[in-house]
Image 1 (cartoon, rainbow, N blue to C red):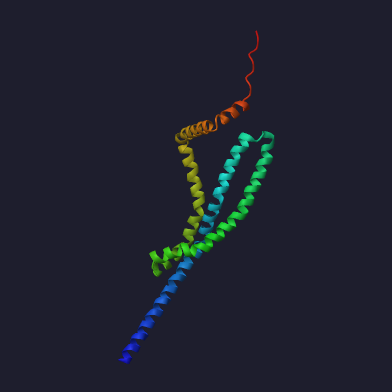
Image 2 (cartoon, helix red, strand yellow; image 1 turned 90 degrees about the horizontal axis):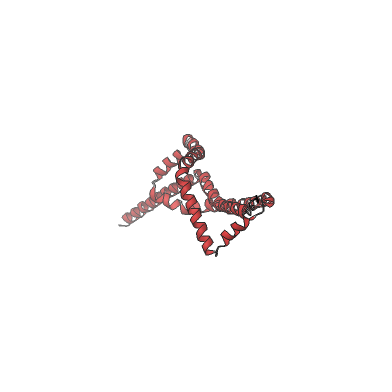
Length: 198
């Protein structure tokens, strides 16, 4: 009886060790996937940090055109650009560090749940493939080429909708501001020249 209990204990311990070893191997494969994907994580982080900068730049551009005297626009635009660059210089590294730090706890469990160890090994091989890397490096160029053509093709259909939306929003804001927008436009418009006397 004692021999059976000892044998059972040894078998159970061996199975547990094998399971831990397999679990460790799977964790290692997950780490490899995350390591190979680090450039993509960094690109994602850059995009997250740049989005608010694009919004800031767009808003500043509108204000520059509408409210800043023409003789001060260029100097002010350079100052705005410097502030946006300062923001990006601080934000991109911070978001990149956060993405790399959090990837194992955010992505790791999903990979562990949905992929076997063998599938993870295959995934690492695919992600390290020179062909895939070349394809991924060509993605920005392909995306830009497509984007240019889409914008060109869709412009006739989209521009009237955009202009209508801008006009409607301007009217809403003018009404909500008690006519301040239209009053500002009237003040900025050159006075009509009186008709010449005959």
